[in-house]
Image 1 (cartoon, rainbow, N blue to C red):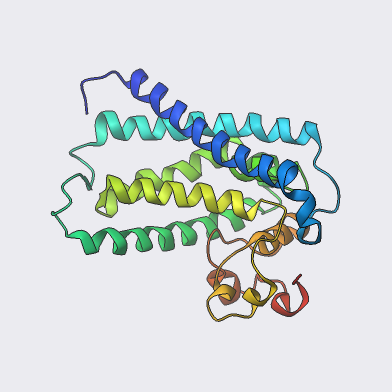
Image 2: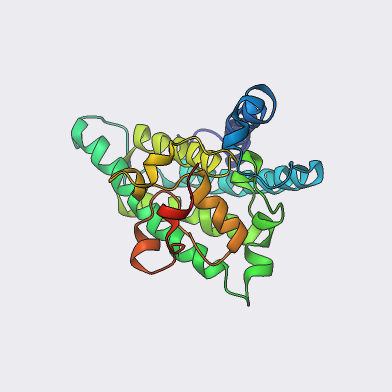
Length: 248
C-alpha cells in the first residue's frame, strides 16, 4: 500500500469519492425530480421547486468536501497501514465481527455527528462552520455532501480517529461509507419514501427519514442526528409530537 505517492492516492480516492457522490446523489435527483417525481406528487415534501443556483452551490461545496475526505483517506492509505487498526485478513476477528463492527461504527458516527452538528448551530460559529449546508434552504440529494471547509475537515476526522480505535476490515469501512452516502442522500431527498405508519412503528421511529431531517433544515433547532433519533429523543431536540403531526 505504500508503493505509490501520496498524490497518487489522493487523486484516485478523490475520483472515487466524487464519482460516488455524482452517481448516488445525481442518480437520486434524476430519478425523483425527473423520472418518477410526477407520480409521487403527494409524497413531495418541498415547499418550492429546487433552484439551479442552489444546486450549483451544493455541488461546489461537495467537490470541496471530496477534496478533504480524499486527503484524509490518502493519509491513511499512504502512512496509516500498520499503525492503525485497519486489517485485511477476514479470519483475524471472525466473520461475525464484520457485522458487529459495522453497527458499532454507525452508532459511534451518529453520536459524533449529533454533538458536532448541534455545536455547528451555535450562533457564534454557524456562519463559518455550517451555513453552507443550509444555504439551499429546501435540500435536494445534491445537498447531502455539501459542507463548508471547516465542517468537512471535522466530518472527515471521524474516520481518521475511528480507524485508530476500532479494528476495521476494508469491507466494513466501505460498507459504512456507502451507508453514510446513501442515508445522507435519502434524508435530503425531498420526498418521503417511508410509509406514514413507519413513524409509529417500534423500529421506524428510531430511524431518521426525509421528513425528519427536512424539519431540521426548516427549523434549525431540532433533529441533529445522522441515522438514529436516539439522541434527539434523549436530549429533547426532537420536534414535539413529531410522530403524530408529520405523516403523509
